[in-house]
Length: 323
Image 1 (cartoon, rainbow, N blue to C red):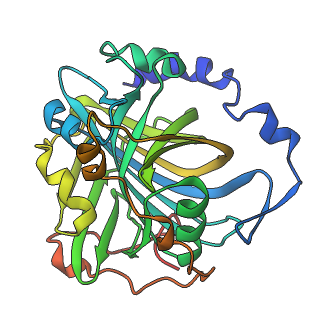
Image 2 (cartoon, rainbow, N blue to C red):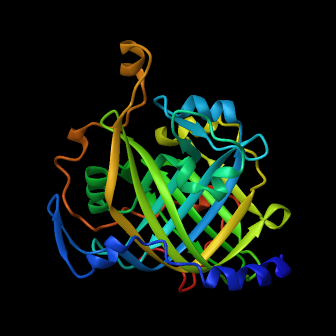
């Protein structure tokens, strides 16, 4: 891994920023979208990120994907469950944690070949279908769901960093949602410039939004990647329990200080099915009335109870934790 890092680092350093030029042209402009004040671009600074990806059964993943235009991304004959937790420390809407549970997908009329979407992300419309997306604050739900169509809802979340691990716990209404813990990878200090497309359902439509991250991070692949994932009984997590998630991750990543930009451009399509009855039965997300009465509160719910997770780390350093 060290030799690979030495080879990749010079190449990654000269890669251009993934942030579209339009976002730079808008820098400093003001927006008032759905009553929320933004200074463009919609960005975040000093935001620690943990990531882990686990192999899943492709057929089971396909059954979870609504509509007819998303298909599981294939890696070694398996699909991928991608867990990403971001501890947003500086944004226009305050501090909050975002806990993403998603299936890697390609979007289009035909299945994509294995691996090639990693090299030609735009051609094959590689992204992730976000199954569940709890966040810490009401205003994050209002903006994320009401503007970008993300399946956000407020929950009890934390983000804990120790010298050896990074972990995050998600609870709602006293039930376990998810626990993810990664062993911190050996320092690679890779300069990363990432673009990611999120596909989400809201109002029986499929919404696509793009986010761009720049950071110096540590990554572990294959046998070097170590993580622990526990899925609970919260309703939003239930579909994931049918995916036959394997315990050994494909990769883990720790980004101590990521800088992100959420594109204000997004797209939406109708979810379709062969018959009207099947279309009505699709898992199409919440309806518009789920956001109409939301306010802009930045208060967090109580921290989740770590005592329910055997061996869960509890000490916190300046890289994470709840405010």
